[in-house]
Image (cartoon, rainbow, N blue to C red; front, top):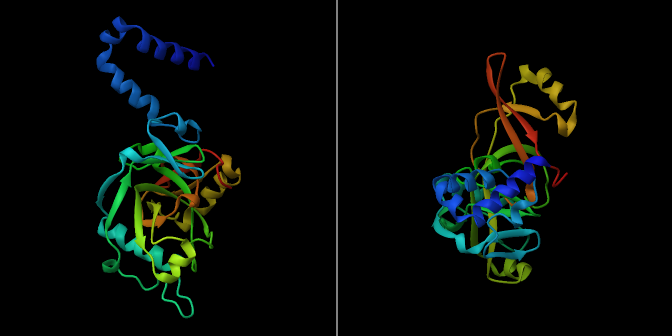
Length: 256
Protein backbone atom coordinates (compact mmCIF):
# COMPACT_ATOMS: atom_id res chain seq x y z
CA UNK A 1 0.00 0.00 0.00
CA UNK A 2 2.79 2.43 0.95
CA UNK A 3 4.60 1.65 -2.30
CA UNK A 4 1.46 2.30 -4.36
CA UNK A 5 0.86 5.63 -2.61
CA UNK A 6 4.46 6.76 -3.18
CA UNK A 7 4.25 5.84 -6.85
CA UNK A 8 0.95 7.70 -7.23
CA UNK A 9 2.45 10.81 -5.60
CA UNK A 10 5.51 10.57 -7.84
CA UNK A 11 3.36 10.34 -10.99
CA UNK A 12 1.42 13.40 -9.84
CA UNK A 13 4.67 15.35 -9.34
CA UNK A 14 5.87 14.40 -12.81
CA UNK A 15 2.65 15.58 -14.43
CA UNK A 16 2.06 18.75 -12.34
CA UNK A 17 5.54 20.05 -11.46
CA UNK A 18 7.12 21.40 -14.64
CA UNK A 19 10.40 22.23 -12.88
CA UNK A 20 10.85 18.69 -11.59
CA UNK A 21 9.86 17.28 -14.97
CA UNK A 22 12.57 19.35 -16.65
CA UNK A 23 15.22 18.09 -14.21
CA UNK A 24 14.40 14.40 -14.76
CA UNK A 25 13.23 14.54 -18.38
CA UNK A 26 15.88 12.03 -19.47
CA UNK A 27 14.51 9.50 -16.97
CA UNK A 28 10.79 9.92 -17.66
CA UNK A 29 10.79 7.71 -20.76
CA UNK A 30 12.70 4.96 -18.95
CA UNK A 31 10.37 5.17 -15.95
CA UNK A 32 7.25 4.92 -18.12
CA UNK A 33 8.67 1.91 -19.94
CA UNK A 34 9.43 0.08 -16.69
CA UNK A 35 6.09 1.02 -15.14
CA UNK A 36 4.08 -0.52 -17.97
CA UNK A 37 6.41 -3.36 -18.98
CA UNK A 38 5.14 -6.03 -16.62
CA UNK A 39 1.38 -6.35 -16.13
CA UNK A 40 1.25 -10.13 -15.95
CA UNK A 41 -1.86 -11.53 -14.36
CA UNK A 42 -3.43 -8.12 -13.77
CA UNK A 43 -6.48 -6.32 -15.16
CA UNK A 44 -4.52 -3.19 -16.11
CA UNK A 45 -4.64 -3.75 -19.87
CA UNK A 46 -7.68 -1.51 -20.34
CA UNK A 47 -5.77 1.40 -18.76
CA UNK A 48 -2.28 0.80 -20.18
CA UNK A 49 -1.96 2.05 -23.76
CA UNK A 50 -5.70 2.72 -23.73
CA UNK A 51 -5.82 5.42 -26.43
CA UNK A 52 -7.75 4.54 -29.57
CA UNK A 53 -8.63 1.04 -28.40
CA UNK A 54 -11.42 -0.79 -30.18
CA UNK A 55 -13.35 -3.83 -29.06
CA UNK A 56 -14.23 -5.85 -32.16
CA UNK A 57 -15.57 -8.79 -30.17
CA UNK A 58 -16.35 -9.54 -26.51
CA UNK A 59 -13.34 -9.82 -24.22
CA UNK A 60 -10.77 -9.06 -26.95
CA UNK A 61 -9.36 -5.52 -27.03
CA UNK A 62 -6.56 -4.14 -29.18
CA UNK A 63 -5.31 -0.85 -30.55
CA UNK A 64 -6.34 -0.71 -34.22
CA UNK A 65 -4.03 2.26 -34.89
CA UNK A 66 -0.99 0.07 -34.19
CA UNK A 67 -1.74 -2.59 -36.79
CA UNK A 68 1.06 -2.95 -39.31
CA UNK A 69 1.15 -4.93 -42.54
CA UNK A 70 3.89 -7.49 -43.11
CA UNK A 71 4.46 -11.10 -44.20
CA UNK A 72 4.43 -14.20 -42.04
CA UNK A 73 7.80 -16.00 -41.79
CA UNK A 74 7.86 -19.31 -43.68
CA UNK A 75 7.79 -21.36 -40.47
CA UNK A 76 4.80 -19.39 -39.15
CA UNK A 77 2.95 -19.68 -42.47
CA UNK A 78 3.43 -23.46 -42.54
CA UNK A 79 2.12 -23.73 -38.98
CA UNK A 80 -0.83 -21.47 -39.82
CA UNK A 81 -1.76 -23.68 -42.78
CA UNK A 82 -1.51 -26.76 -40.54
CA UNK A 83 -3.78 -25.05 -37.99
CA UNK A 84 -6.39 -24.22 -40.65
CA UNK A 85 -6.38 -27.75 -42.06
CA UNK A 86 -7.17 -29.08 -38.58
CA UNK A 87 -9.74 -26.43 -37.76
CA UNK A 88 -11.68 -26.89 -41.00
CA UNK A 89 -11.59 -30.64 -41.65
CA UNK A 90 -13.10 -32.20 -44.77
CA UNK A 91 -16.83 -32.78 -44.71
CA UNK A 92 -18.95 -35.00 -46.95
CA UNK A 93 -19.80 -33.19 -50.16
CA UNK A 94 -17.72 -30.12 -49.29
CA UNK A 95 -14.06 -29.23 -49.68
CA UNK A 96 -14.19 -26.54 -46.95
CA UNK A 97 -10.68 -25.31 -46.17
CA UNK A 98 -9.10 -28.74 -45.99
CA UNK A 99 -5.94 -29.71 -47.89
CA UNK A 100 -4.58 -26.17 -47.96
CA UNK A 101 -0.92 -25.61 -48.79
CA UNK A 102 1.49 -22.78 -48.11
CA UNK A 103 0.90 -21.47 -51.62
CA UNK A 104 -2.89 -21.37 -51.25
CA UNK A 105 -2.84 -18.97 -48.27
CA UNK A 106 -1.41 -15.48 -48.56
CA UNK A 107 1.51 -14.76 -46.21
CA UNK A 108 0.33 -11.14 -45.92
CA UNK A 109 -1.14 -10.31 -42.52
CA UNK A 110 -1.63 -7.43 -40.10
CA UNK A 111 0.49 -7.62 -36.97
CA UNK A 112 0.05 -6.39 -33.40
CA UNK A 113 2.46 -6.08 -30.50
CA UNK A 114 -0.14 -6.78 -27.81
CA UNK A 115 -3.81 -7.27 -27.05
CA UNK A 116 -6.06 -7.63 -24.02
CA UNK A 117 -8.06 -10.79 -23.35
CA UNK A 118 -10.67 -10.45 -20.59
CA UNK A 119 -8.76 -7.45 -19.26
CA UNK A 120 -5.34 -9.13 -19.17
CA UNK A 121 -2.64 -7.97 -21.59
CA UNK A 122 -0.52 -10.37 -23.63
CA UNK A 123 2.44 -9.27 -25.76
CA UNK A 124 5.02 -10.58 -28.19
CA UNK A 125 8.56 -11.35 -27.02
CA UNK A 126 9.92 -8.34 -28.92
CA UNK A 127 7.46 -5.93 -27.28
CA UNK A 128 7.22 -6.91 -23.60
CA UNK A 129 9.17 -10.07 -22.94
CA UNK A 130 7.71 -11.00 -19.57
CA UNK A 131 4.14 -10.59 -20.85
CA UNK A 132 4.89 -13.00 -23.70
CA UNK A 133 5.29 -16.09 -21.50
CA UNK A 134 1.99 -18.00 -21.35
CA UNK A 135 0.39 -21.28 -20.40
CA UNK A 136 -1.95 -22.42 -23.16
CA UNK A 137 -4.14 -25.29 -24.31
CA UNK A 138 -2.54 -27.23 -27.14
CA UNK A 139 -5.05 -28.90 -29.46
CA UNK A 140 -4.78 -32.57 -30.27
CA UNK A 141 -5.99 -34.48 -33.28
CA UNK A 142 -9.26 -33.40 -34.82
CA UNK A 143 -10.76 -29.94 -34.86
CA UNK A 144 -8.55 -27.32 -33.26
CA UNK A 145 -11.61 -25.55 -31.91
CA UNK A 146 -13.08 -28.61 -30.18
CA UNK A 147 -10.10 -30.59 -28.90
CA UNK A 148 -8.76 -28.84 -25.80
CA UNK A 149 -5.72 -31.10 -25.46
CA UNK A 150 -3.39 -30.38 -22.52
CA UNK A 151 -1.62 -27.31 -21.18
CA UNK A 152 1.85 -26.24 -22.31
CA UNK A 153 4.13 -23.29 -21.51
CA UNK A 154 5.41 -21.20 -24.40
CA UNK A 155 6.33 -17.76 -25.65
CA UNK A 156 4.34 -15.54 -28.03
CA UNK A 157 6.41 -14.55 -31.08
CA UNK A 158 3.74 -12.99 -33.33
CA UNK A 159 0.17 -11.71 -33.00
CA UNK A 160 -1.56 -11.27 -36.34
CA UNK A 161 -4.85 -10.84 -38.16
CA UNK A 162 -5.59 -12.72 -41.37
CA UNK A 163 -8.59 -12.36 -43.71
CA UNK A 164 -9.43 -15.72 -45.22
CA UNK A 165 -11.30 -16.09 -48.52
CA UNK A 166 -13.64 -18.84 -47.38
CA UNK A 167 -15.33 -21.41 -49.61
CA UNK A 168 -19.12 -21.11 -50.28
CA UNK A 169 -19.79 -23.78 -47.65
CA UNK A 170 -17.67 -21.98 -45.05
CA UNK A 171 -19.18 -18.59 -45.98
CA UNK A 172 -22.63 -19.94 -45.19
CA UNK A 173 -21.40 -21.10 -41.80
CA UNK A 174 -19.48 -17.91 -40.99
CA UNK A 175 -21.86 -15.37 -42.54
CA UNK A 176 -19.34 -13.39 -44.61
CA UNK A 177 -16.69 -13.75 -47.30
CA UNK A 178 -13.66 -12.28 -45.57
CA UNK A 179 -13.45 -12.75 -41.83
CA UNK A 180 -10.61 -11.11 -39.89
CA UNK A 181 -9.40 -13.36 -37.09
CA UNK A 182 -6.59 -12.88 -34.60
CA UNK A 183 -4.03 -15.64 -34.23
CA UNK A 184 -0.92 -16.17 -32.11
CA UNK A 185 2.37 -17.78 -33.06
CA UNK A 186 3.73 -19.54 -29.98
CA UNK A 187 6.96 -21.43 -29.44
CA UNK A 188 6.37 -24.08 -26.74
CA UNK A 189 9.09 -25.02 -24.29
CA UNK A 190 10.41 -28.56 -24.48
CA UNK A 191 9.14 -31.37 -22.27
CA UNK A 192 11.17 -32.34 -19.24
CA UNK A 193 13.69 -35.19 -19.41
CA UNK A 194 12.27 -38.44 -17.89
CA UNK A 195 15.14 -38.71 -15.40
CA UNK A 196 14.00 -35.44 -13.79
CA UNK A 197 10.37 -36.49 -13.27
CA UNK A 198 10.87 -37.03 -9.52
CA UNK A 199 12.24 -33.49 -9.13
CA UNK A 200 9.34 -32.12 -11.18
CA UNK A 201 6.80 -33.86 -8.91
CA UNK A 202 8.21 -31.95 -5.95
CA UNK A 203 6.89 -28.77 -7.56
CA UNK A 204 3.69 -30.18 -9.06
CA UNK A 205 2.41 -31.56 -5.76
CA UNK A 206 1.56 -27.96 -4.78
CA UNK A 207 -0.64 -27.51 -7.86
CA UNK A 208 -0.90 -24.06 -9.41
CA UNK A 209 1.15 -22.53 -6.58
CA UNK A 210 4.14 -24.80 -7.11
CA UNK A 211 4.51 -24.64 -10.86
CA UNK A 212 6.56 -27.20 -12.78
CA UNK A 213 9.79 -27.71 -14.71
CA UNK A 214 10.54 -27.85 -18.43
CA UNK A 215 13.48 -27.57 -20.81
CA UNK A 216 14.82 -24.16 -21.81
CA UNK A 217 14.81 -24.95 -25.52
CA UNK A 218 11.93 -23.57 -27.57
CA UNK A 219 10.20 -25.86 -30.05
CA UNK A 220 8.84 -25.12 -33.55
CA UNK A 221 6.18 -22.44 -33.92
CA UNK A 222 2.56 -23.47 -33.52
CA UNK A 223 -0.53 -21.31 -34.11
CA UNK A 224 -3.30 -20.93 -31.55
CA UNK A 225 -6.24 -18.59 -30.97
CA UNK A 226 -6.62 -16.28 -27.93
CA UNK A 227 -9.22 -18.49 -26.15
CA UNK A 228 -6.51 -21.18 -25.88
CA UNK A 229 -4.56 -18.99 -23.43
CA UNK A 230 -4.83 -20.08 -19.80
CA UNK A 231 -2.63 -17.54 -18.03
CA UNK A 232 0.69 -15.73 -17.90
CA UNK A 233 3.63 -17.60 -16.40
CA UNK A 234 6.78 -16.46 -14.63
CA UNK A 235 9.91 -18.12 -16.06
CA UNK A 236 12.97 -18.74 -13.85
CA UNK A 237 16.17 -20.37 -15.22
CA UNK A 238 17.51 -23.23 -13.09
CA UNK A 239 20.32 -25.78 -13.30
CA UNK A 240 19.39 -29.15 -11.79
CA UNK A 241 21.66 -32.21 -12.01
CA UNK A 242 23.61 -30.51 -14.78
CA UNK A 243 20.52 -29.79 -16.90
CA UNK A 244 19.61 -26.20 -17.89
CA UNK A 245 15.91 -25.96 -17.05
CA UNK A 246 13.12 -23.46 -16.52
CA UNK A 247 10.74 -23.27 -13.60
CA UNK A 248 7.28 -22.31 -14.85
CA UNK A 249 4.94 -20.58 -12.38
CA UNK A 250 1.40 -19.62 -13.51
CA UNK A 251 0.70 -15.98 -12.63
CA UNK A 252 -3.11 -15.95 -12.60
CA UNK A 253 -6.17 -18.10 -13.13
CA UNK A 254 -7.87 -16.51 -16.09
CA UNK A 255 -8.95 -19.84 -17.57
CA UNK A 256 -8.86 -23.14 -15.67
